[in-house]
Amino acid sequence: MSHRAVPAVPADPTVLHPMPGQPRVVLLKPLITSPLIEVGEFSYYDDPVDPTAFETSNVLYHYGPEKLIIGRFCALAEGVRFIMNGANHRMDGPSTFPFPIMGGSWAEHMDLIAGLPGRGDTVVGNDVWLGYQAMVMPGVRIGNGAIIASGSVVVDDVPDYGIVGGNPARLIRRRHSDEDVARLLRLAWWDWPLPHITEHLRTIMSGSIDDLEAAAPGRR
Image 1 (cartoon, one colour):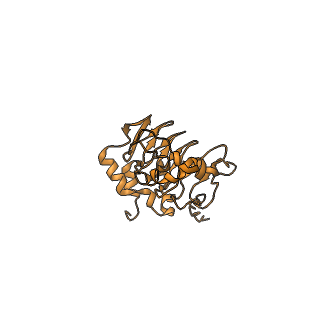
Image 2: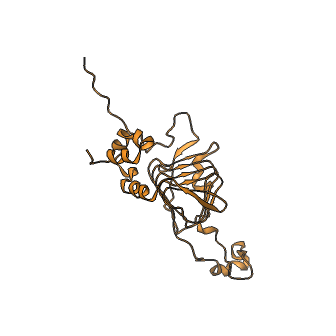
Image 3: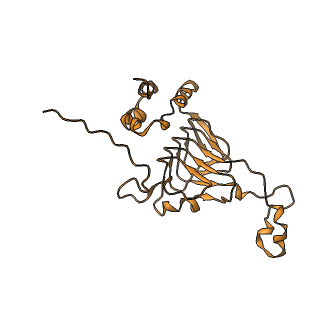
């Protein structure tokens, strides 16, 4: 008797809680409502208290116009926070205190804190792992495949497939050679169609870069 192969079914990127019985894990794309935050499919946040409060509890001082952009397949551990440019204070005068926000006649001087210079959007690439209570400062760009160690304070850009840690975070090492990083960026498995990712999941998780190249769409 012949048996028909059961087609592989990709996970659903639209569900809020992807893990049955684990309300502490949320997919961010279906959660986010702010037009200042963009998140790719399957990037998730894990928090035992209230992961659904990510926009208000984990993205701080976000008044715009700078955006927070997070790619696909990123893993954000409990307490990861993004400090946005709204936290900025003047540093060119005798005091850094934001007097105008206190009200009264002080509010007439709001022009002194409006339009403070920023570093632009905060951008997290694809397949990035941010460890427990890592903090990302305004305008930082974190490359694809990077790992941010627990408790790190990321003040500078992180290269593709870099591992950083500390306060301030410093580059510990690269996960792959420059040549292999270039190969991985060309392959960009996170942009593959979901059925193709599903078919080659084991290769993506545990194969070599040669295996990944062999599995790329159009290579057969």
